[in-house]
Length: 230
Image (cartoon, rainbow, N blue to C red):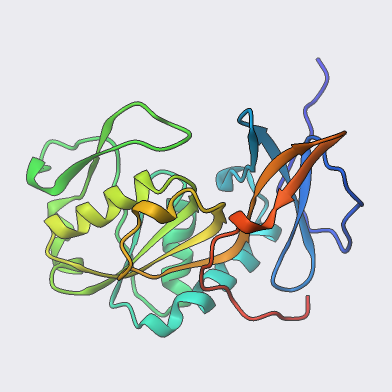
């Protein structure tokens, strides 16, 4: 069987010219490019990023960029959303100087309380399920300024569930920080008083002759880290 190409393993110094068919080069804050697969949704395509398949070489700079973008919010605690937000929750919290972080999950332990759970779904896992917060960790977030961390914001459904979960715990969200802001489909339903930061942002892609072209009008306006040298 032919081996499928591996993505998100290294950065490239330059991007190849358009049109792009199956992958697209996304510019990083240091000027390098990360080639991401394009997922065909019919009229549009989106860039995919599966963080728990990425190399440490790719992840380390993204963690640093995320922390830089969210540092000014002065969060007192960090909550990494399940599942792929767990890849970044701990490392971002550590870079920001926190001693620990909080990891909600989709499985219920025997001592969990339904009062600290919310229904959720996502663009990649649309089936309804519940997100749970361990009540033994309430003291880490209750009454505190909390930074939500996730891998990608696409439709916003899982991040909105994260905000609802914080509300059950009596925590105040200071913002959401993601590795990739994927298009702007999430913007309409997102609360205006919760800022969003990202290591990088990608637009939606429109079908053109011979491939896909980025629609830069769909690139979400989020807080990004400063440009830097590689």
